[in-house]
Amino acid sequence: MTELELIIDLHKNSERQGPGSEKETLKALEVMSLPNDRKLKVADIGCGSGGQTITLAQNINGQITAIDLFPEFLDELNDKSEKLGLKEKIKTLEKSMDDLPFNNENFDIIWSEGAIYNVGFENGIKKWKDYLKVGGYLAVSEITWLTNSRPKDIEDFWTQEYPEIDIASNKIKVLENNGYSLVGYFYLRQDSWIENYYKPMEARFENFLERNNNSELAKKVVEENNAEIELHRKYKEYYSYGFYIARKN
Image (cartoon, rainbow, N blue to C red):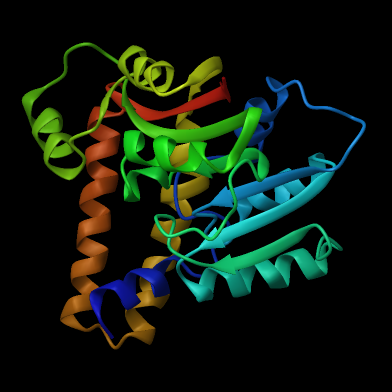
């Protein structure tokens, strides 16, 4: 298996492929003033196995198009939605988030938890804006500094991993400069990282290594994830995901 295939294998059969929670998905949804007189069209971009997609489907009157590049995660989402009786509300689409086949002003809501970094924050909000109706909502979670200064180790790490990391006020300026008005912002609490993401991942390491014959590449994947977990435990007060909810002007 390639390293990418191993990463997918590690994250299969998990509720989420990144930090987040049902509570915080609902918190982002609650700040939107949604119409009650019609069904809404929603795109969940970079949905993974659909933890947040299921929550949206259970709490929105509408149709959700759940988009991800990896069919393994979409298969899991299809299984979940069928078991929960949500098959009619969730349609999956295997596509890259920077190559979407949608018409202009097609959606009432564009949602993306922990995924927009794949195309870059500013690039993503610019591209996806075309697919959003005027007055429609964008809801994205994005890695964000919580403080104006931080230790050099964590500064260097994130600047190398994702140069667009910034404090929330600067992210909000990017939204405003690109035709959005902010309607809500909050950052993910620690449970969304530790209890919902890192601890379940750690619990999968042993079986992951066994089914991949303890290969050197599989060990490398585990080591890199362990390093990320330790980094977060050491520097968690300096960064998190910020959840940005904005309306298209």
